[in-house]
Image (cartoon, rainbow, N blue to C red; front, side):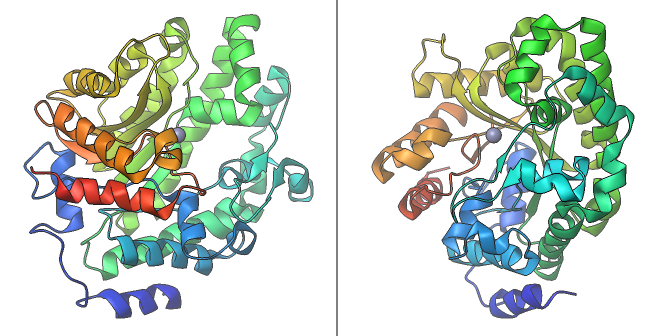
Length: 384
Ligand SMILES: [Zn+2]
């Protein structure tokens, strides 16, 4: 039982106007199933942005579960997006691998609106392998923010989801093996080692990370799915990998996606940044129901609308497409341009498959409120 959740349920339940003829949950579920919707669902990944929007700073919420949950619920109450995103930061993902007394060295909470800064946990592949072979994450889990902040925060949001009678879904998320393998050692190290290190040793590292990630899914099953979670974001890495690396090490994410898709009802892949066509085609054949993607790869000579159409054709008959505007534009463009990009995405996508308005990555905490409102308005105004 959480007082913060109850106070929001008290304020909102039975007191807010419905939007459209479907509930937020029904609208998202229909899009995932590629069925008709009353309005195009809109669910930008608000993450850190919610903290800022609600008037808190990260220094205040970093160790405060109630204020973190309060941020997400206040944001949802004001904007009425079709899903509520959890708050998550890199500390949640990595600090169970660091002894408590050393965490200050690795994680730094900077300004109120700034991302938590972190340093790679190791600088050599042997050390990275040792971290996983020793299963250090089991040793330090109890004292980690994953245990003291991330899990109770998600349980509060799921409590809200249930108390609101599942009218609005909460999106729970987890890093895939490729993302986690890169985060632990730093993307630069990882990409260098893909070329310089012994293949069998790299595969051993990926296997260890995959084992840990598959174990994390068991935890998600016990604590989150059993408390009502159905929508699941898989934050992928591998954004700088070439086709050969995808062939060699793509198996790790595939194993994760296969397991997650057996557990969660509405799983989707998050693939942000410049998207390599090969990576998009691999994801199009994975068993998840939707793909949150971003911009075309550098060498692709396609404008925004053409790119959205290309992706929609990859996903036709297979996946719901989630995008628009790009992550960059969400932060830096003017509202008019954002509305135009959302419209172009929708017009290029809906002839082929279903769509959700959701930029390819999280909304920057410096993104103007008008920009977030512009994407919501554009989705609500689109003629389905
Ligand atoms: Zn991302």
